[in-house]
Length: 374
Image (cartoon, rainbow, N blue to C red; front, side, top):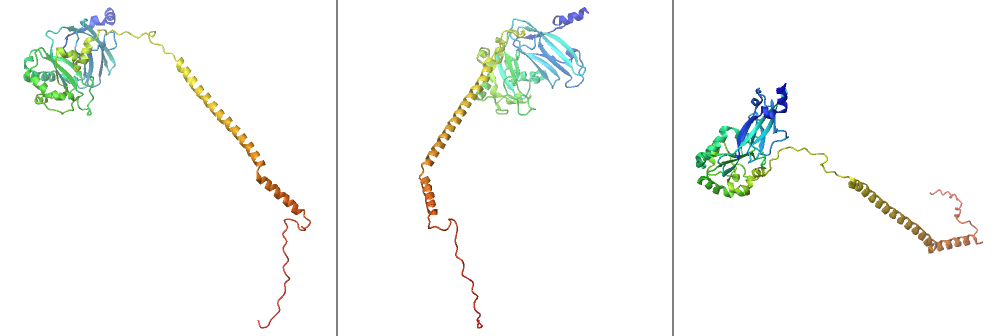
C-alpha cells in the first residue's frame, strides 16, 4: 500500500528513466509498446501515445512529438538549448485500444554540454522524405557518409545533426501527390571549416537562391548523383552553407534562434476568471434600439409630410376647377340655347309639338287598267 501511494504522489522520482542528450545536437527517443511492458500484436492502431511536460498540458517549445504509421511507434526529438535547467521531466501516457489499459511512463531528459559544438553548418531540404524516415539509422548514416567521403572529408570525426524539422512545420506546402514525402529540413554541423567542394557547390547553385522553393527535379547539380544513388532528392534552392557568426542574421535559423532566446518558463499557469477582461454591451444595446427608432421616426415624418401636402393640393385644385366652370363661356352658350328653345316653343305659329315628326300620307292606290295587247 505504501508503494502504491508513493507511486501515485511521486511518480517522477520513483519511476523516471533518464535520457542523456547533448546541447546543439538532435536527440531522438522512441516511444513503443516495450516502454510500457506491452506486446505488439500486429494491429496498426492498437496503441496511442501522448507526451507532455510533467505537470503541464504540453511539451516545451524545443521538443517535438510525432507518431509514425510506418514504424508503428512515436518519436520525441529536438535540439536541447543552452538552459539553466539541466533536467527536463516528461510524462508519457500510453493507451491500449484493445483492452483500454492506460499506463504512464515518466522520463527525464538530462541536458549535457556538447564538447566542441559545430561552428559550420550545411542546411538542406530533402523533398522525398518525412521526419520519421530520418530516424532510421542507416538512412541518416548514408547522408553523413556523402559528406564524409565526397563533399566534406575533413568533418569525418565530428559531423553530427544539428537541426531536424518537418518542411511543413517550417512553412512549406504539402505535396500534390499524397504518396510523396512531405519534406524534411536537416542541418549537419562540424567544427571544421567548409571544404573547397562545398564552396564550389555553393557558387554553382547561387543563381537558384532567388527561386523559393524549387520545383522538384528543377535543377540537377554536379553532385546530384551522390544523393540520388542513396535515395535523397534535394531542393537545391534551399541549400545553404552557414557559419556560426551568421546565425543571427540568417533567415534559415529564425526558428532555432527563437527557441534559444526564449526564457525557460514551461510551467503552465492557469488563467484566473477575475483576470479576464469584462466587456460591456450597453453601447451595443443602445445603438440597436436607437438607430431603428430614429429611422422609423424619419420615415413617418416624411410620409406624413408627403400625404398632407398632396391632400392640400387636391382641395385647391377642386376649388379652382369649380370657379372656372362657373365663369366658362360654354355655360352662357348653353343658357342661351335653352332660352331660344323656350321662345320657339311658346310661339303661336307653332301648332305641332316639338319632337313630333310629320310624314305626308301616300297617294291612294289605283288599279291599272287591263290591256289585252300586253
